[in-house]
Image 1 (cartoon, chains in turn orange, purple):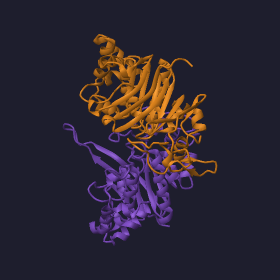
Image 2: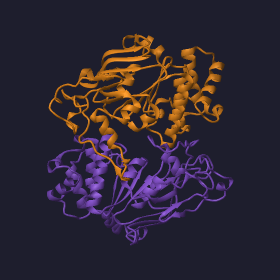
Image 3: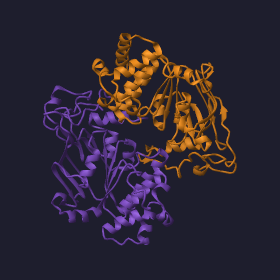
Image 4: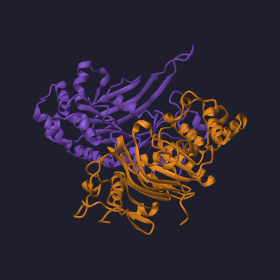
Length: 317
Length: 316
């Protein structure tokens, strides 16, 4: 396999000086042009993993990180802030769940796109404006000339997410991180944005790190998938294989808990008892307390065992 | 059999703040909606944002008065009831909201919250009644003294359900009751609601944007778009063989759908300025010039199954 474009190695992230563990020893590899979906429920550490990639934490978070995040062989976690700032947006773009919160309400759309182009690509004003117009067209915004002068509150949620994507694409990043980019959107708009992301990825050859809580979305967008639970990757592999034949009981249970029409014509779903642990994790298998297949041995810490393209963290798999 | 809840030609407008000298614009949240919920039946209300589904839920319980049309409960027009009579009626119709964090008073024990509802309706509200209400949703007598923050999101939604069902209502309006919860927790709440429905013979108006969840819960489906009913019918028929282009598009857009892709172009128009004629025509891949002419009326396509679309020549 070719060298990964972005490689996360043994990433651990804790908040409040170590009191709250969010991510614990995560390994991920993202190759050029592929889509890796990181799937997990709230508190699984999926978003913190995405934020750590660009070190997007506030000082008051009192974050402790360990491990390495290699972009083209260079450790982003070790870079000085000024160096990292050059990478953000230029090499690695990011879009978030709530495009309303990510856009500055007091500047018009044109200014927010041209700012990125002028800062990272040092384009003169007129060229930056022409490029902003081209970007708005590329992300499918109608009347782009008019929209350049619109303010965020004048746009719908789907339109704002298109603007965020235009900003993220402005410098032609090699990697786009999308953290729940469609969760706040209506389902017909979600389908539009997913279609747009796929088309842009094919056109630019970007690698896409797609963070989601929705396992059903993954089949539509991802090449590979990593399922996270309580700060760890519990299963990973090619998306189609994991969805068709999940090996970790949590992945299986996540698939079963969504209502689906069975062969008998009835709608089935099965609840997972209990709730995910947050912040402080049990010593053995972290899913054991909710697992239907729990047995002796589950109180031991579970290593992530690799077999071909697949990996699973379960002694019962 | 007479309907438990019946809405006839119900509309609801909201007045938006005026800009300059122009008259105040109207937001037409719900327009000319008729629907019925039979005793013990679960009707699923599906729609995207701006469809009016939450407004409709509040109209059904007369938490909001309609601008036009009538809402009747057990044959009685709710508008004709005095305030006192309406309050007494509320015992039979209760509501569960999306956000279990916002709908519980953080300073009050959950047992106190349930006793309060019972007391309001002049029902016995001692420890035995509170324990019974908690037991119905899988919580224990010992939980009664605890505060909301000591519970997880899923448990809080159980508490909200326990409180809504404490008065033994005949109708429950559930507005996105699982949307704020993790997927692994959602299924537990859905199973609970299904069990309670079977046990108590509860009728439900189940509101959700999530088609999978609605399919699991509902006997009948009403699909809303921009305040109007696009299609209504038995759940199995509507999901298996949608007759309205919007329903078909909604089903195709659902993640993991095996239906042929049918991506709608454009944005959902504003309910303050809905398109003329068929409100869906601006995004409909099958729109004809005639779709602009008049609002299509619901018409039967099969027993109990109606659609508001002028086209009959579509293979969806």
